[in-house]
Image (tube, rainbow, N blue to C red; front, side, top):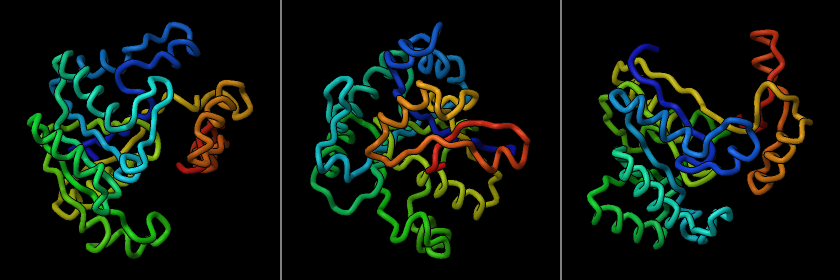
Length: 230
């Protein structure tokens, strides 16, 4: 691909005190500094799950619910002269909390898109990769070549949003690609390393298991840690 890159950003987007504690030399605002340097060619999409909003899911490092964390991240980026292109509320099925956040964001002048839940995602490939699946989701027309996709936490629908964008782009002849920027797990440490074991424990609600990436090993002959969902 040579026209667009959708780059899914895992972890905390504005202030990652956990990574700063664990990784020597890592500064809490490293990602924001990267965004500032790439700003000319960068747009940011922020995904949050309607299901997480409805159940009042909390990010426990700051004791903020996901709607509060969403507003906090957007505000902190704005203070650094980095504005969000849009917020995408994923897995939407009419949830009241999602409608309330949508209204609040729109009152702040922020674009909001609703991505509905796809039946059988991700296993029902024939349905998902069709005009009834990805094709039925909104297509965000973004002109800049680098699109960072962030969220308040894991399981927020970042990957499904990126894949739906790829589907629409390819239908329109746009040659775009997808990659992930993950802080944890650390790919060049073994799965049983304490840092990667700690990641696995922290994502128990998502069912993550740190494993050796079999596809990368087969393609490149390099042992690299990843997690089962990827």
